[in-house]
Image (cartoon, rainbow, N blue to C red):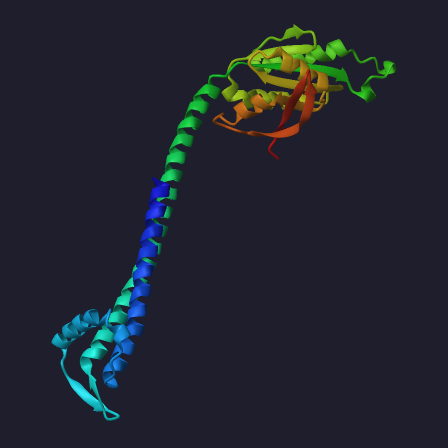
Length: 283
């Protein structure tokens, strides 16, 4: 339909332009016809259009049939009127061509506006569907992997890693009311309200910023995707709270965002790659 409309405007423009050129040619012939009349000549090659010019002159004569002498030649007003009719017709056709361009422009802008409105409606619908789908992903796992800081790992300091881990887990249990599960790669915490993960992040960042002699690699993953969790732990991004791309994307649909997510990098994972992000505090 759009191509048909463009073709219609193009044909209409060309037809109007053709008529305008025909009238311009008629003006040139009419001037010769007028000269022929003034000098009382008889140019037979104008015979094909003479009846048309006579009908125009008859109409002009009905408007004004006056005449006057100029340079000893008789000038009839009806010729001026006829010429003016041709000129007005050219001007009307030129305005018509400009009008066609304007109508085509309005049509094009209206079509674009309608397309954008439809696209927005579709995108809004898709977003709402995506939002509902993402908001159903509320279960998430936190894995905390620890090690002694380098300055605290000297044997003479006698810092017990297990004791430090116990202090950490006691603090998290007190703050969250959640018990950890011993995980082969660290300590696992399970939560079921990802929409309010900011509260848990507040606690985890307190752990990272604590004065304890530990380095923490904290990993979070929505759903029970142990493959991604193991990869996150393997990267040992100490001092960071790392997440896979799907967990970072899910955070966009939360009602509050006290933290931001930033990309860490893309890493090899089995036969493919895995995009890693991290939670960062809004400074």
